[in-house]
Image (cartoon, rainbow, N blue to C red; front, top):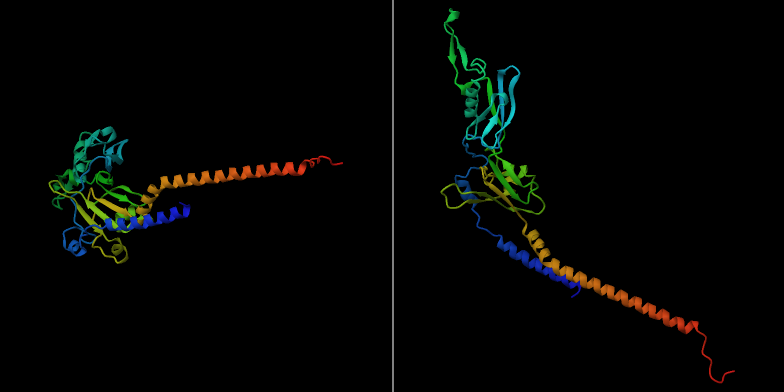
Length: 307
């Protein structure tokens, strides 16, 4: 078979397989009307997620305004695998499983071993009778309400979602509770040329006790071009956003993998044929040169009886 014939058959295989793949990629889609009437939160109907619970390896910002002289507490603190953060000179505090408000309270109570209640903001002056300055009273302040200690989250590393498939930067992404499908695609660098924009799915793992996960279709064209939020779902921890590859591209790659060994054989045969022709041509040239040399270079043989 010639090289052109092989190429034509390869194109035929590609077209056939592309048609099969296109048919095989058809999945049962949830009608958008059904999604809109369901309780799945989307862009403009987001639900308030439970208050964020800190776990390793989240990153916290801890600020204490009036610590011991020369012993400041200021800056980011990594939640270590054992669930603790280090406060340097002041030791460690276990924070895993707590909210930022609970962590603040725990840090304040821990620091009472080293710092006075006044410095920790655990007392406030409650004015009494305006005509009697001595009537002012000190009122205790709940550690959660101290204005001398601040705790915030700077990196949400323990709660994540995943973006997989044909995007520029697939991987795990931190989640704060406000992200949507469109946010996730943008954070992942957008779709690459081989992606199928019409074939994107949000896979939501089944909660404990449930029988199966949710698979939600995403209409990216409607989200971007028409501003339709119907399938711009609010992301939840553990979600998987799958961006599938274009069927034609998948078919091409599949055909290339199958055809590669045959292409190698064809190339080897062509190279061998070319080499054989070259050798034959060289041999013919050498033979022709040798024959021509004897005929033209040697003197004619003398004829018997000639004078």
